[in-house]
Image 1 (cartoon, rainbow, N blue to C red):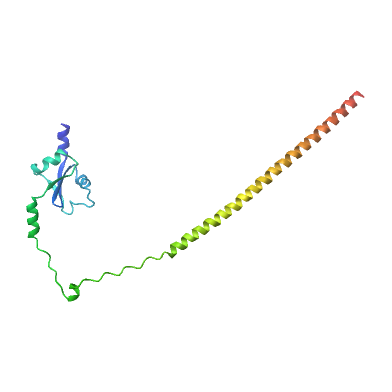
Image 2: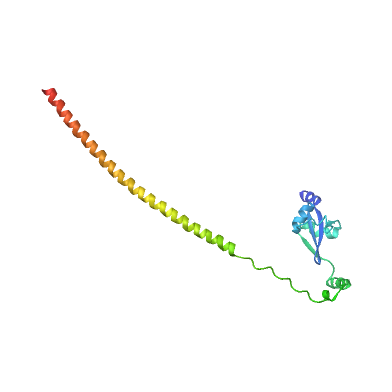
Length: 182
């Protein structure tokens, strides 16, 4: 029953593609256009239409969503149809139109100088930036060295101050001991 509902919802659409007619069973014109890979609305152009002939709808309905190509006429009928067409007449108004036309002059080759200047400017910018970064890196190294020296000096000064405190405390405690004992 689900298949019957799906088939009822599908319509068969057709459009000519070369010597073939392309049929597709789809739920909408939009889906048919997508199946054909059409970039424009073939229905509004009159190039596509709904097919109701049961002989033509049988195969597309068995393969919904797939494009089914059917040859339009036999090979002999296609050749015969080409022969019936008359070549378009060309009316020459002057000898100038009959003579081969001169090839159009080619536009001049684009000038690369602006691009070259921009690339050269970028290269100079990179060199300048690398030099600036190099100077900053040297400054950082100098500052780190100075920082280490300051830390060592500060540690030495703290050690000296703590030694003086220890000496002063020892002298003070000795003085207190002498005072209390005496």
